[in-house]
Amino acid sequence: MAERETVRITGVHALSALGRGADALLAGVLAGTPAFAPVRRFDTAGRRVTVAATLPEVGTLAEELADTVDRACRAAALDRTHRAGAALFLAAHGGPHALPAPDGGDAGPEVPALAGHLVRRCGLGDRARVYTTACVSASTAVADAATLIGRGDLDRVVVAAGYLVEPDQFALFDAGRALAADGAVRPFSAGRQGLLLGDGVVAVVLESARAAARRGAPTLATVAGWGRAGDAYHPCQPHPQGHGLARAVEAALRRAGLPGTAVGYVNANATGTPYSDVSEAAALVRVFGAAAGRIPVSSTKAVHGHALEASGLLELVVTVLALGHGKLPVNAGWLGPDESCPLDVVTDAPRPAATAHALTLNAAFGGANTALLVGAP
Amino acid sequence: MTAAVLAEARWPEAGDGPPPAVPGFVHSAFAPLVVAVADRCLRARYGSGPLPAGNRTAVVLVSASGDRASAAHVRATVAAGGRVGPLFFFQSVPNSVAGHVAARWGLDGPVVCLSPAGDPRAEGAAEADLLLYDGDAAQALLVLIEQAPDGTPGEATAVLLGEGTRQ
Image: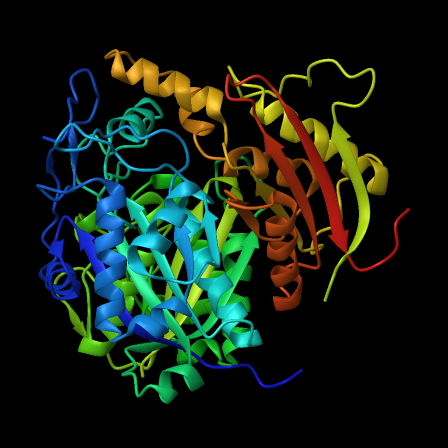
């Protein structure tokens, strides 16, 4: 097999409750102040929990995705020709829109037609895929894009993902008692009660090293490795020992040709849910052994919330920015250690990032797990 | 690389009634249809299963509409100010039934759900191809399902793709 093409990240843009743009996202996760507040976007009367991390004055998901893709392409300095040669991999929830347009007009096309809409609006090539793989949608899209770039099938992929907190998923998570009744997300912490939802509309430009070099593009980071694996355990619960997630991490390391000792930070999936955080900790111990307790770990969902289908891309961008800036974000909401999560959780303040490689992990219903290994440029 | 078709099944075939109910899934025929067609395909290859650990069999579920009946029920209930039942949370994404199939048969490869804009089988086969190329999967169970616009069951196809010969 020919040597695999290196996959570079040359442009990013993100919207979250922390603000618009990469700078706002980085500043927010380093400040570590949770963005959860009472939901004003729709009526939460009768719900057990009434808070989420939402950005005021957002447009429709279609509008925000188009703007985000456009800004990521501009951040990557893609001209019209470069855009026309880019594929679009979109991660979003299927089904009807639950949020009306702010002006009462059309909320825009649903999945999968939304992908074609974005291709036309943003001048991208006509090769598109739409991922509806729940909370690993975006990270699976990145892994697939990296595979296809690595194989030489594609030179450039724009991966976009979007979730804006809306009443249907909010009601479902509330009904499933998945939301934290105390209004805080406390990953890996004693006393954690669950997750909270958050906005995330994100786009990332991935390119082959050759394509990026041809146009003199700056590199923010590399996607050095990736892995996907299933638990084969339960429709909704993760394997208690994190078997699938551990195999995803091992695949990412193997693909990167790196030992576990190369990993200096883990942006964890940890949602603040009692059962699943233990599963993730077990996966890290399974891969890294006793060293798992010495790798800095944080879940920034404690600050920006869980962006569902977009979470993997939002957290990839956080990881890229943290490596680039040299500081590791905090895991907010910490009350104290949980002995079933024996990890080095970054709790009080951002730490210096003395590492060239970081993992960002995601897991979803269906026992779906992904690991993306990010390399500093 | 083009993977071989190791087994293939459809639902309904002649004589099929509605697919059997699946514990934990309510209201919609989406999950029962996925399970019925997946079981039929895997039984043809593996009998009663499950597969031995480490089989790296991916589940690739391809559906443009997804579980339209459940989504419409949730939309109508929430719009009317009502409370949805907790089981709708657990079946709110196609991953759940994919995970049900994976757990039943011990399929420990990746779980991927796609909403195709073009030809569903071509898009699903392309996903299976890249997972096999990458090595995260050794084979892939492709499930293609669409519900009619009114949410009635529709039809589904399951295809097991991998190296080897059809039995």
